[in-house]
Length: 139
Image (cartoon, rainbow, N blue to C red):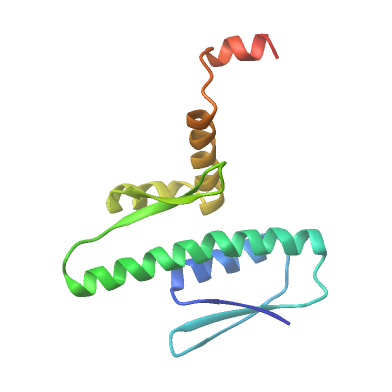
């Protein structure tokens, strides 16, 4: 069995939803605030890559939620953001107003948000001066 662990209920539930959508049987458990999900080692390799990619995204969300809870416990401030991967290999953290990110996450899945952010990063790193309709005509 392959085991995936989360420390926050929200990404754990999103991961379970993802596995259900992909028709992947799983076992879940919780022990002292650690949410574990186990899947069979016999899972299709291509599907397993999708699962691991989704887990990585949700693990980032898990970390952000954990950090936000720590900040709230300290009563200093609340922070939220997304991780952005640049083409030069660097990974940076883009701060986003927590209520705004919550609103965005209520409409988009973590994968959709990642795709959206990657489109913006690509546009910034590879500027295109032509309007979208002009690009489509010349493609």
